[in-house]
Image (cartoon, helix red, strand yellow):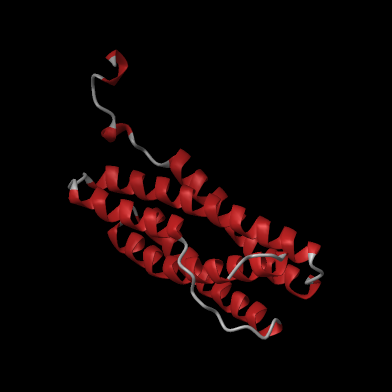
Length: 169
């Protein structure tokens, strides 16, 4: 089917957002379980709960539009999940695992923020003002989650993960 209208782009983006958020519930659960730092573990568990609420909001958007979600894969999120699996095969230390998870979380949040910004822009253009507030609520949560992860990254003591000869590299 040819994509000829912004409504089609919006619907596909909504389907991908739904897929992404559902997948992230599973990813965040795994990240919380593998985290060794309690603050990082707690942050992932809290964001998993928020993500479940985001899924519910997206379902409200689907209901408003009389649509059934198609769960179109979002390859970007699949790629990040695959990166996590591959990284674990390298048998990283606990601190390196935590650092990598925080980095993955920053990537995920930025991806979601961009996705919601585009959906909101299109929703406004095609006069779907009834769904904009739901999408904005998800966007605001993603922005807060990104700030939390960035703050955790800055506060976390990674000195044990730096190679002693790093200053010579």
